[in-house]
Image (cartoon, rainbow, N blue to C red; front, side, top):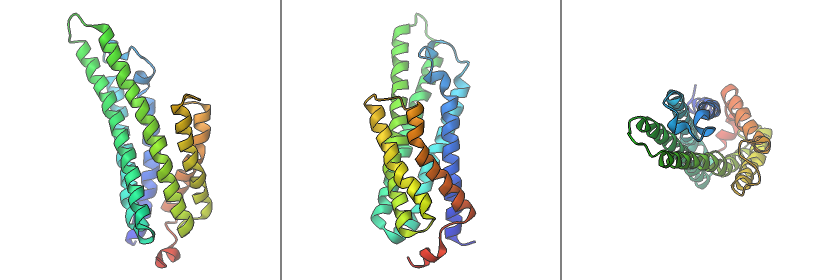
Length: 229
């Protein structure tokens, strides 16, 4: 098995790993995200939240790993696009890490609350809501704003290079701008990110990533087109 085939398999696995870890992480975060008084209710759910942070770390490492494995392939066709793709995926991973730190900081405050006498409940609640707000914004700017341009660049590259079937690239060409548009609409309060409209606008980019992942694992890149690089 040559290095390009190995890269294709690794990229496919990382796409699936990123999607699965993102879903699990968000589900595990629910005690914090849905309960504004979490910080004063004891440490019963702290372990669950820490596991959520662990899965989001997997997400961050996965998106960065995708860019690392794709760079030598992208570089053969367009070095500027390769650098741009890596930058946006690094930005996405970095933003995810900021969100992780914000919620782990909330776990720390939760632990400290039980140790402090004469607690100032209102100050703890305000700090907790602020940290949740930071996470919510990172959840928008990473998986939506940063993901949009990187998806568009990669799918455009794949469409032009014909390294995978063009229907996969078209999913990305549609999904990238849609997920970016979704982020803009959420930012201006048109609808919530976790909502019916948010889910609908995310379908094309999800279809792109999963179909690309399955194809890369099963078939790899078009060897004929790579040979013409």
